[in-house]
Each structure stands twice: as C-alpha cells, then as structure tokens.
Amino acid sequence: MSALTAELRQKIEAYLPRYPRKQAAALPALHLVHDTLRCVSNEAIREIAEILEISPAELHDAMSFYNFFKEADNPLGRTRLWVCRSLACQLRGCDELLEHLSNKLLVAPGETTKDGAITLEFAECIGACEGAPCFLVNDEPVMDMTVSKADELVAKLSTMTR
Amino acid sequence: MPDFEPVLLKRIHQPNSTALDGYRADGGYEALRKALGMTQAQVIDVVKTSGLRGRGGAGFPCGVKWTFLPPNHPGPIYFCLNADESEPCTFNNRILMERDPHQVLEGLIISCYAVRASTAYFYIRYEYGPSYRALQRAIDDLYANNLLGKNILGSSYSLDVFLHRGAGAYICGEETGLIESLEGKRAWPRIKPPFPAVEGAFRKPTIVNNVETMACVTQILARGADWFKSIGVPPDPANSRDAGSYGPKLYCLSGHVNKPGCYEAPLGITVRELVDNFGGGVWKGRKAKGCIPGGISMGLMTEAEFDTRLDFNGPGKVGCLGLGTAAVTIFDEQTSIVDVLHNICRFFQHESCGQCTPCREGTGWMLKIVERIRKGQGRFEDLDILAEVGNNIGIMPGTTICGLADGAGWPVKTAIRKFRAEFESYIRSGQRTSKPLPLVAAH
Image 1 (cartoon, rainbow over the protein chains, first blue to last red):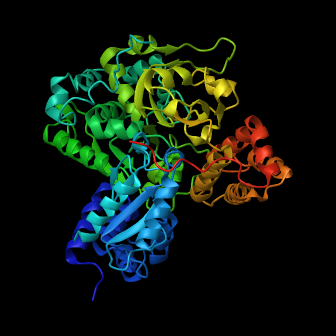
Image 2: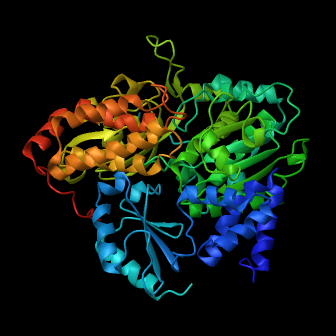
Image 3: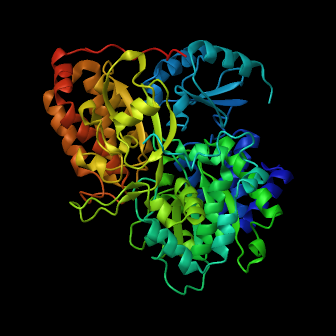
C-alpha cells in the first residue's frame, strides 16, 4: 500500500511546473504530506523522492534540516500549538506560559498530548510581537496571551475534531 | 516629525484593505502602468536616484543591486522576494503582507519588470499563515485581471509569481540560504562570490529583495524619486561610506512599552522619540534600562544612548552592528540583563544552521556560559571568554560563510561592554539578584 493517496500525489505534481527543477517542489510536497498525514514517514519520503526524481536520502537530508516535519514515531496532534519564546515575548512572560502549558498538558515542547489533541511547541519569534506574549495555533497567531486565556484556548482545542 | 503622514501604512486600517478593487480605487497599479511605459533602464534609474536602501537588514542600495545582473543575459532571470522575516521582534513585513498585499505585489511586478525577471518566487515563512492566504488571494485576483501572467496590461511583459512556504528556519532569511531552501535543499548559505545576481536560484542570475523594499518601490514609482529623497537623512559628510538614509521606514516597537506596534516614521527617528511619541512611554511608569535597536542581531543599547538616530548610520555610532530591521525592543530597569542575554544566546544556538564550525560551536558555548552565569555559577573570566567568542565568529573576523554569527556575537559583545557592572555584581552575588520576570502582561 502506498503512503501517499492519489489526491496527494496529484497535488504534489501540480507544483512541479512552477520550478525549473523538480527538487524545488520538496518543501511544498513535504508541507502537503505533513499537513494531511500528520507526519512524513520513511515510506512517504521514498514516494515523494520518486516524484521529485531525487534520492530519498537527499529529501530526508533537506527535511531533517528544518526540525519542522515530524517523523512517523512522533506524529502531530490535531492542533499544533506554538508558544513564542522570543525576547519580546519573554519580556512579557512567555517562559512562564510555556511552563504552565507543559505542566497542564503533561507534555514537553515537541510532544503531543495522550488524547492526540495538541502538539505543544516552542517557536523562535513568530513575528506577532505587538501582541506579546503570543501563540501560533497551527499557522494563525493569537496575541496578548495570559494564563487564563491559554487555559481557555487549550479547553477549546481539546474538544475540537479536525 | 509630527506632520509626517504614513505612506506605506496608509491603507492598512481601511476596511477590506486587501481587496484588489479597493486598491485600484486608491490609485493602485497606476505606478505599474507608468513603469511598463518606461524602459527597464529608466525604472532602475528612478530607484537608483531615490537612494532606496534594502529594508531587510543590510541596507544595500536597491537600484545598485539590480545593476549587478549580467548585461544582455539570455535569461531566465529569477526574482526572489524574501518574506522569511524571522529576525526576533520584527513584524513590519507581516503587517504589509497581511493588510496591504497589493502594495507589495505592485512593487514586486515593477521590480521584476526592471530586472527582466520572468518568474518570481515569493518565499514566505511558514508562521505567516494569514499573510500567505491574503497574498494567494491577491495573486489569484491579479491573474484574473491581466496584472500577472501573459502580457501584463497589454504590454509585451509576462511574469509568473509563485508563493513558496518556508519551514521555520531563521537562516532562510539569508539570501543564499533562501535560494538553497527554494531549490529543495538544506538551507546552507553559499560561499560568495558568485553573488546571486550572477549565479543564484537554479544557477541563474537572481535578485533577492525584502518585502518592505517592494512597498517602497511602489511608492517611488508613484510619487517620484524626489519625493522619496525629501524624507529621511542625507549622507553623513563625516562618513564617506554612508549612502544616506532616505524614505519612510516601518519601525517595530515591542517589549516594555505601553503601546507596542508597527509605526511608520521618516528614517532617522530616535529611540526616545519612538518610545515617547508612538509607544506611549515605558510601561508601568518605569524607566527603560536599554533596548535592542534593530532586531537582536544588532546588539544592545543603554538608556543613555536612546537619542541615537535610527537611520542606517546611527546605531553604528554607539557600537551596534547597524539599523538591522529597525525592530526596537525596550526592556525596563527591573529586567535582568542576564535574562536578556540568555534569551538572545538561546535563539542563536537554536538557529545556527550548523554549516560553519565557529558559529555552530560558538553559539552553543556562548549559551552554555550564559546559562551557567544565570544559574549563579558564573566566574568573572566567563565575561572575557564570552566576548572573545563573540569577537571571533562571523564574516567580519572571517571565520564563517554568512553573517548569522556576526549577529550572534554582537549582542554578547555589546551586552558585556555596556552592562559589565551588572554582570559582575550578578556573578559576585553567587545567586540570582534580580527579580524573576513579570508573570504576564496586564491587558
């Protein structure tokens, strides 16, 4: 059985004409697969690499560089919740918020809650400093966070189905 | 300068500011029409005459960069728009892309026309989801209205623009790191020369410019080079290498101020004016201890240096690396300088790409030393070791390929030089002397 669905393959192939070399579609392809399957498995790497006409090792080399894509042993939860830890956020209390969430969700940054609802992460500046301390919910910023707002957010995300 | 009317941010508070109709009703894409009626050389000349310097951090003259392309190249020539805005505390490009994407795209199309690029890759960091979606809608509208694609506005010029999302790596903001990442490889910066203008993306001549630079290009074509030059600071006669700091600039103000935000002012505003006139002063009625003047890579400023002008030439006068991204983060008198430096070192240790040993190891060791100091186990000689590491990593001492390490070393060097007494008293006390950070801001 192949790791990529026909639909995913089609979406990846649609990116190819944008670039003079197929390899350049690596990041778009990885994002597509990662978003849909919640991780990029070794099998998926092999299949993407085949589409891009590069070796699986080359693709894994690029992928692992970013520290962004989860592999099969640690897949993403339904929501990826990033706590920004840049200077602007630290000055307004982000370290305490990250610690609070870590304790509340019983996970370290990079891990997913047991119920698969939330993957907690720290982020290096998400560029929403006017609303520090801020989080990123998948790729949408939420600003001016407090402990109680964080609790509300987590409660909402825990009940959400994808 | 109280009489200054925002130009780049003029439209961001309008309802539906991202729509093409509204943008055109406000005179949008007329600058493009004007540019398409000029020769490429004329467009480059206008931008060159305006004195526009790149807004991404290095401040290289934009029009001059464009002239580095090989003449009469058969093509293709690529354009990369650097929207990997990852310098901590910087968000001016996000505001532009999210709220007024057409102003950026118009500048992009004009610039691509000027350099004869047939394809533009808009490299946007993954974290900017709303910007990505606003831009994708805007680009779709442009294709539907003959403003992108074949024969733009009936001219012989054709251009494709593709959004390309990053994956959370700071190094992709370095132009050759960006190109490597675009090509689907790990984002390791390239050894220069060759510079991207000669051999860049896919080994073809490539221009890499910043988002705010594009918005400036739009306004320069619309209002003229003389208008642009009427704003800002002329070259410092005492500094023969200063090319002047013309035009409006978006300043990002964050940290311990009452009203953090992105504010537009003529280049050359001082930190104090920015904090008092725009930021509503330091929060909680406190005094500032210092700031970072242009993203954390530029080093630290003390409160006594707040009258420094934030133009391309100013921060260097007080030992900072430069204007950088003009992102000013204020920290108040109760903030421990050890915590500030720890945060900065943590960032660079995490974001060093690992290609050059001095940077990979240097950023790691600087963090370890600062961590030890912070835990109360520091030694006085640690301060000298930190400064020594800071002095020896980067392209200035000549030990690395890109400038990330210079940016990692600068805050360390300036922190120790400017706040040495506080570090020493912290070390001497053998424990944490300062209060913990405030829990969460009162909103």
